Amino acid sequence: MNIQTLTLFFLWCTIMNGILLALWSGAFIFVPDLVYRTQSRWFSITRDSFDLIFYGFLGFFKIVFLVFNVVPLLALLIIG
Image 1 (cartoon, rainbow, N blue to C red):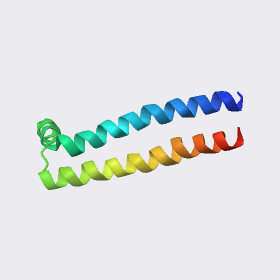
Image 2: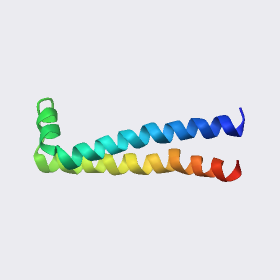
Image 3: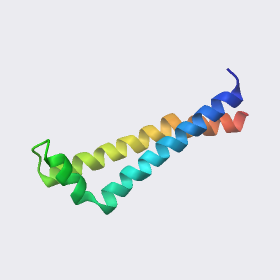
Image 4: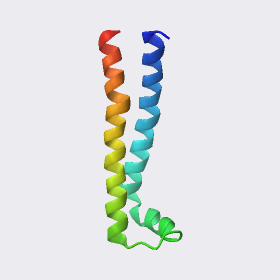
């Protein structure tokens, strides 16, 4: 496996996970009531707890996205 293949792999991982992060953030910003109603059908949870959990997972995903997608891509672009 060469650097170009790894760079392409991390580029596509970054693009796909970036789109997922953008969609998830958009759902949290623009239609939080719809997401809450959908999830509250399956789980008995208060709105405050739901917002806290949703925001926490969004932050966790953002950190994982940066550490495991963007940083390796940037490192490969620098050394490539």
